[in-house]
Image (tube, rainbow, N blue to C red; front, side, top):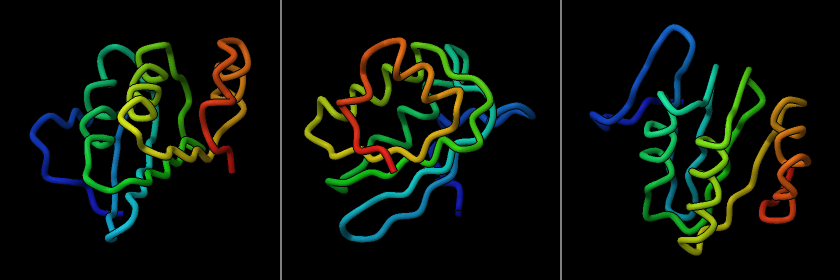
Length: 105
């Protein structure tokens, strides 16, 4: 995946977000910890023209409500959001009863 050129991206040793686009969808890869300090980068990646977004969260080691909020905002903008999840993200979705908002792959 190629990282987008967005200046809002925050890349740290513990966090990285990358994406690739085609006409119909955007595939976003998220790596590391998604929290208040890094959620803006995820939000920037989710801000796209494509109607479908697939977010690969399999390499996320931690996600708090800041990250979950970014995903829910994308759904609220009429985007179809599909998630590839990790056990940690699955637990967050279950604890917050938000799994039904997303397509889980």
